[in-house]
Image (tube, rainbow, N blue to C red; front, top):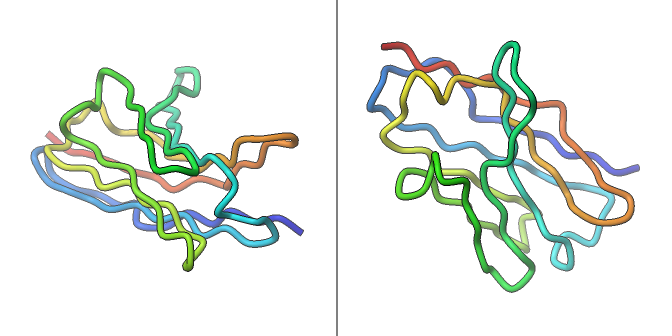
Length: 114
């Protein structure tokens, strides 16, 4: 059974930092591209960042220079380091394992106060 479990969300003031973690089980983590998405209230889920099996990364324009995605294959974990947070970063953040089939975590809430 595949599971993606996110953690690390919370309430932070604007300008602060958080690090999200997503631990995967039931998959061969090292051969899967991983990504983070987010969904703000009343909005569609949107792409945030992606990391390939080779460690190549890609970011949404809105988070470039502020967020960093990384992975630790022995720990089956993907991280999202979020710095200089803004109120518009408030959302539920989801971990996604790309492939056929796709897998998603349950999400972790990030709230940035102004």
